[in-house]
Image 1 (tube, one colour):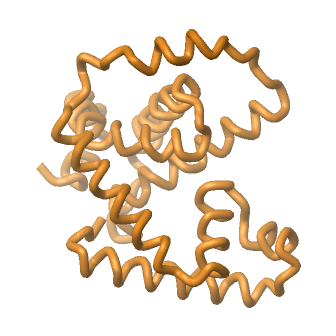
Image 2 (cartoon, helix red, strand yellow):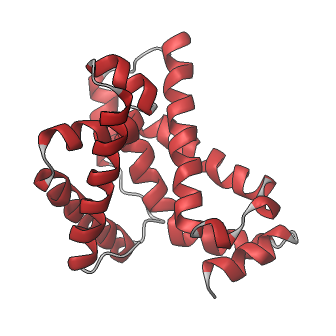
Image 3 (cartoon, rainbow, N blue to C red):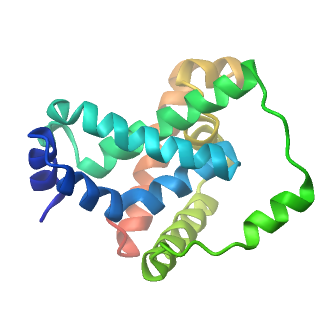
Length: 187
């Protein structure tokens, strides 16, 4: 079933359709959340929150406005940024380094190795494509997508005019799309 078909079913309350979307996208959402937050436990919470929001707002999804994946990753990105902001206002105690290393070595029995490998390949392609961008464009993309800044905030942080930031973002996204489409990554 396509993402759009599954979302139509989710909007009617079909939990099996939501589970299929979760199986399809949870590891990629986890990657986005980890990249933004940097802490596995909080990233796992973001994954759960993202899919909860999808369940709650399924009726608001409109395929004519964009793909399900774009909508999903927008929700995930916003949830991760919200989580970062909450942590800045009330920091959590840090666990010991030894506990962290032990947790990192525990294998996830539910992990789909093939999906994880595919996601790793996609992430490597995106990193290579980002490296091909001019530094000014790359910086705008990093500040927007990984630091959660708006274009107004980027302009203020860099001292560049807002129009320049808009242009750099547009050109960067266009070039990334061209590079990634050329490599066969179309999502």
